[in-house]
Image 1 (cartoon, rainbow, N blue to C red):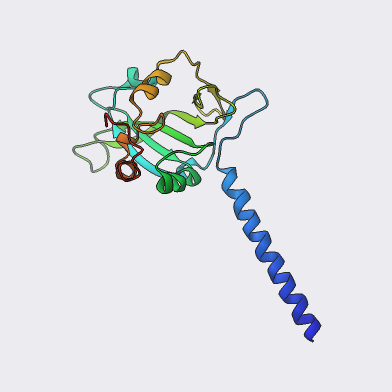
Image 2 (image 1 turned 45 degrees about the vertical axis):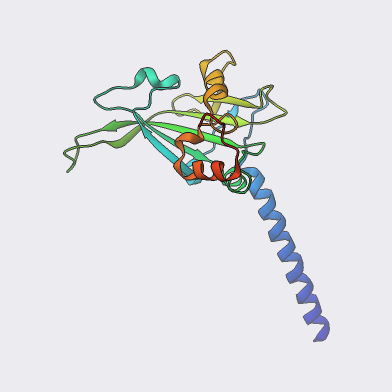
Length: 195
């Protein structure tokens, strides 16, 4: 009986260790995944990530040309849980950070709504990825076609690279538009001086 209790205790310790190891492995899985030819695999669960902000009718980025005054586009920004937790601790984005920008059309009249705007269909999905070994400038942008499971690397000559480098409040990102993280960056003193 004593031997059985010791055996059960040993099994319990091994299971606990396995669970902790699995949790650590799971946290690294929320980083970017690439195909053999360098395309970014579209994360299917990004809407379960941390929601940072939503903008309405913002005029920057590749989809700005599709903005309409009558029914402006919504920009929804999500970031991986691991990157978010690290930012809360340090005020900086760790290597393997991944953001998803989900652009949605808006509607103003539907069902019982008589004013304002609500979100409707997905117009586009884009990603910003920090991978210090993979990308010369540490950060890269990807664009997913309609329903595409992989995203193509946006050429470094595109305006998003220089815009983020010049106007990003923290580490190439627009933290100035993320109200819940702006105060973190201020507290951690990682906010660029002009912001």
